[in-house]
Image (cartoon, rainbow, N blue to C red):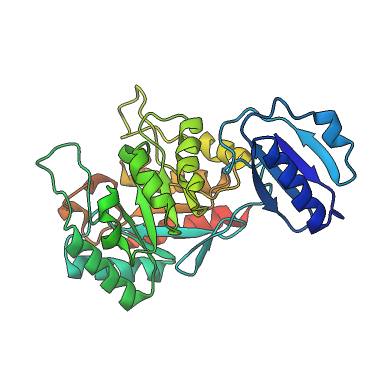
Amino acid sequence: MIAVLKENATEQQIRNLTEWFESQGVKVNRSQGDFVTILGLIGDTTKIDIDLLRGLDIVDNVMRITEPFKKANRKFHPEDSVIDVGGVKIGGGNFAVMAGPCSVESEEQIIETAKAVKEAGATLLRGGAYKPRTSPYDFQGLHEEGIRLLLKAKEITGLPIVSEIMSPEQLPVFEEVDCLQVGARNMQNFDLLKAIGKTQKPVLLKRGLSATIKELLMSAEYIMSEGNPNVILCERGIRTYETYTRNTFDVSAISVLKELTHLPVVGDPSHATGKASLIRPMSMAAVVSGADALEIEVHTAPEKALSDAAQQLKPDEFKGVMEAINKARSIL
């Protein structure tokens, strides 16, 4: 249930109403906008009389909602959230591009790539130091050394960094990382989500391989319920019967999420398609579908990449994709 308060409600009146709700055994989540205050009621609200609430001087409207995600719900928080990632804002009309290699492989590789993506217009550097791979024999990343190299690339280029974390025990290693990426395989690693929720770090939460939109939002709720509101959602393709592409890019999910939640939404055409040739059109599709940011894989020599070679762009190709993205954004 949510109670929309009138603009002239005083702080004391809001506090009195909040205390009354809590005396009825429900938790209250307050969302303060520029012109309206919304109280979201979490718990068993069946005993609360809607007609009684609507009759109060400070209440404009009362609605019951059925969605189990409360903190991520746009009904509780009508205005878009803006997440600050190392000085780069995402959401609320602020657009960002995260670009870089699938895996950090060497100092030369990550610094050269960072310089190239920044020159082309990227605003954040992405790179995997810990790599969850389907096969135990595939390259698993450089781990702590990879984080060190990312931080060096950040020092040289000024780009905030995004990197994937795989377990709560790794949090100390990621202390200087600007945005923690939770990969598709860990979207429902609830111990990890709760641990990240106890930090204030921005989180890029990727949709699971076969997860529904509701399940993605419930995973975001795990993080937010622990006190961390800085969640960014990512549509990176889901598993279907189609085999021509690596995954099926659910572009409609971007528009659906923009309706359901106030959290920023990112499109990842690299993992969604698995094909470098499809990144340009799918990036444009994500932009016109309402994406607040894109995450794109770029490598100085994709043919030599230690992971996901087929979906990584060369720097000059990425520059062309950025031009196409800017054209798509210009028509919105």
